[in-house]
Amino acid sequence: MSNPSEERWFYEVFPQAGTSFGLEVTSKLHSEKSSFQTIDIYQTTTFGKLMVLDGCIMVSERDHFIYHEMITHPGLFTHPNPRRVAIIGGGDCGTLKEVLKHDNVEAVTQIEIDERVTRMSEQYFPELCELNHDKRATFRFEDGIKWIKAQPAGTWDVIIIDSTDPVGPAKDLFSDQFLSACFKALGEHGILVQQSESPILHTHSIIRDLQRDLNSVGFNHVHTLPFPLPVYPSGWWSATMASKSVKPEHFRNQDAQNKSFDTHYYNHSIHQAALAQPEFMKLTLA
Image (cartoon, rainbow, N blue to C red; front, top):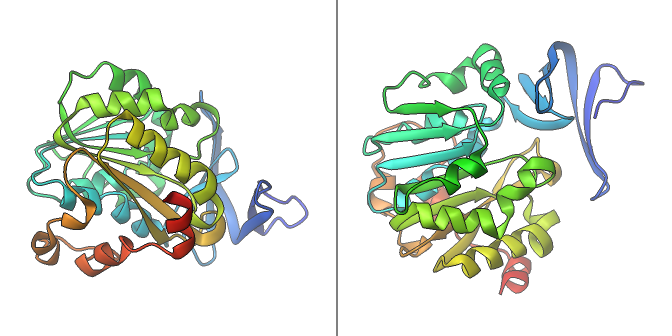
């Protein structure tokens, strides 16, 4: 939420944790109410353009690459041969762009409920949308929960849940019913990747419960990978990866070392390091 007494600053206040994060802004570039949420675009002094959904930061030009690369490449380099990928959410298209960097990916479907988020990203964050017209990409603007439940068994190799915080409609993207539908839609070596909030704020709640539910619906290997993300609450974020058959530590290390595309954060050493967990996470998630 913004603070009207300091018009040059945007603040996201996270009252549940007693924290806030602020960025100096020079202007508000756009504001609208879609059918689902309020979308605001700001120009900041040091983080470039900023997209905010219902008062919560979604993406900034300066640090988005960390999130998009870490929710994408660890999962794709863990699956032995990811050819078909589904992205649920991901309206800013940054995750789609990273998925399409993998030459072995043959088809990607992005299911985003709010088309206006994607259109605003195309207008204000064109660097995230550079591959939107790739012939392998398909866009569906509908309810991702209904969509995944309608998928035939074994259809997808990797499913990435690039969702907002688990409140409101996005809360159901963390439910065991939804996770079970994802499990059914994945193939034999299928991998699910779910954004899983802040390790320092949510290990004892969201992350612990998500890992439990992923195990309960049938995934054999579940692991949470922490990474820095300055604009999100606490500055520390995570993605939780669940696999039917491949252990997280058995990712395709050589392929990651010899990747054919550029990244700004991810590399095979970062991937390996992200598999390590601090003691408080080990104890809580044991």
